[in-house]
Length: 357
Length: 109
Ligand SMILES: Cc1cc2nc3c(=O)[nH]c(=O)nc-3n(C[C@H](O)[C@H](O)[C@H](O)COP(=O)(O)OP(=O)(O)OC[C@H]3O[C@@H](n4cnc5c(N)ncnc54)[C@H](O)[C@@H]3O)c2cc1C
Ligand code: FES
Image (cartoon, each protein chain N blue to C red):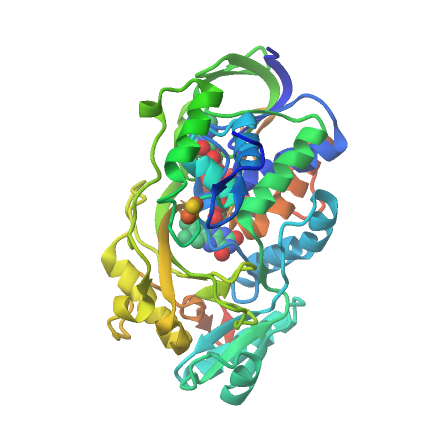
């Protein structure tokens, strides 16, 4: 068994796989991805998977998301059909008083190239006929969409393997040491040596950092989702709260709770989610719910991605973020540039771990 | 079993498709489910769970007792959304994306 690698990526979620794939496009050998379970068993397998941009804040963060969304069509050309659809994104509001806020958002984002329309009630209903007629309006942007996260990871892995990347699953990293300018990675199955080490452990990032005595301030934020039976296509857009997948299922939910690593689904949040869904799209009341799931977001302490070099550790990189589905192609591209070229085409200094002091 | 035997009737997933996931390192029903949709159909895996566990067992020699079952979650059988709804419009855990946008002096914070 090979135990010496140029680069090891710890974590085979959408972030780690995005990095492994983009690396593999530029060098064909010497990359290993380690996962303690199977990719998709982490947060990437329990997500809404909107590729979402238009009302993220502040503007520099929205801009960062936009660059990633722009990479999706090209990514699907390279790795194959990941069911990426640029549906356009619709965020409804029910109080007329929100219109002013929506207009200000549209006005300031116009300057950075994110086109947002503020729709009247009539326009919303014209675009999305099943929306609640009591809606006051919505913000809309054509940049938003969604992707099938399972297909995305599957295709990333297939393409990466084809390019020579090795994967080792059900192989938990338990210890990391720095020795003679290399990293020694001890796992359940073997001890590996590598030059470059990338920590992409998602919501478990804090634990990985501690193995090297580094603080990676990532906390847990649970989200719960309801899934309907397959319905005939009737929703046109990715609505911030629910979307209809290719197979007709509607995925509903946008909840946030602090529950540590507990992946339970709970009746109170399921009920709230049901209330949100029927408020947005009343016809969903008659739809049958077949499944509920929950996932644990990796939430950096200040809410923004932690990306790039780890200060004080040569050849050590970290990528931990929420919105990892949206950001995966961009993070993969930028971390690859950082490792191979020493610099990135889009500045990522503000996302450095060093900001936490 | 024949390669083309259907293991998951609801989602029409064949033996071969389940086998492929295990060959790629999958070890649990959920691994198979996430990659193939096996188990995501109307019966929510009531029919296919045991069959998949057997295939995992055959291919990995893991004892059946060590192959975790799918996590059981609400709803155990399909239920109308309106039955879950309480018609309240007060939200706490559920957020609205626009509510998260903060405007200060006419600018996005
Ligand atoms: C309910 C919900 C809805 C969401 N909706 C969206 C959305 O609409 N759009 C969007 O962009 N994002 C969304 N997100 C966030 C998004 O899903 C995550 O940001 C993304 O999946 C994170 O990917 P990741 O690769 O960092 O983490 P993960 O997928 O969790 O991958 C990390 C991997 O590291 C492995 N690992 C950890 N520790 C070790 C170790 N010691 N040894 C070996 N392996 C280890 C884990 O097994 C895991 O597979 C949502 C999240 C939730 C929960
Ligand atoms: S047989 Fe697999 S979900 Fe019904």
